[in-house]
Amino acid sequence: MTRKTRSPKRRLLIRRIRITGWTALSFLLATILGFLAWAHTVYAADRAATIQVFRTLEVEVVDRDRAIIITPTSEKSSLADTVLVFYPGGRVDPYAYLPPLARAAQDTGLRVVIPQAPLNLAIADTRDIEQLALLAGPHSAIATGGHSLGGVRGCLQATHPRVSHLVLFASYCATDLTSRDDLTVVTVLGSLDALTDPGQVAEAQALLPGDPNTITIPGANHASFGAYGPQSGDGPSRISSERMSQELTEILATFLTQ
Image 1 (cartoon, rainbow, N blue to C red):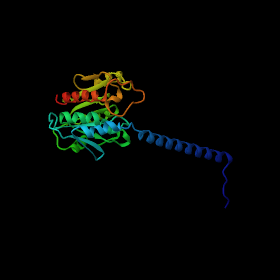
Image 2: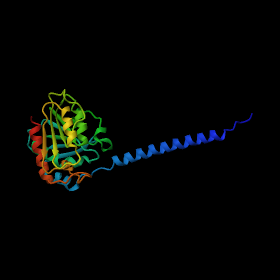
Image 3: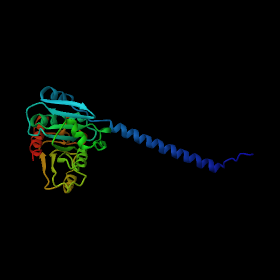
Image 4: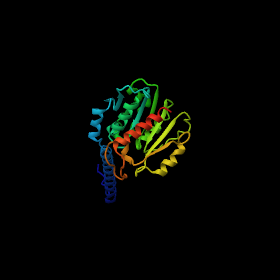
């Protein structure tokens, strides 16, 4: 029995197919590795600002079940029955939101849950909103929202009937919420934010229920909503972190009681 030999043309074709296949596979692996490296390169929380929370504010901070839970220990109780599930911006350390949200918790009684999402992308966190809210204990009201890309995930969660309020920090919705007549929404922007497109914010207002409720904080840029330092492409900040925390606390205190 003689073995058939492949023709030179056939051998060349097979060789080209193999080279193309290995090239495509190598490109795919490089793309995946590049994405994973990008996703795990986060904007780190400001260490000094985080330590200041533990030293000066009357809150308890617990890291549990892939979430940061902020519980006030003071007597403030205007929002004691409310839990805010707040999603971080894309590739931002969740602890970067501890300074402004811990201040709001201390001054209002609000409890806060900051999810720690896979790949540091809030959109990849598929946990149920009630499951997350229960991490902070029994409650009667759930609010949600987030900063930048985190606000997009908050909008998805706002379709849940138990969510009564949605807060968008330098963000906007990509989800149609016009059927949620019982949902109250506030959009908070920074006057010097160079990363949030005003046109897209305005266009997305059509997806929100009722009259648009938008507040612009003078001197704030995109990164002012957290404590993680400057962000590439952002405008300059002209507001102190202390003043920004005061502004956000006042907005949450007013808005979440409506």
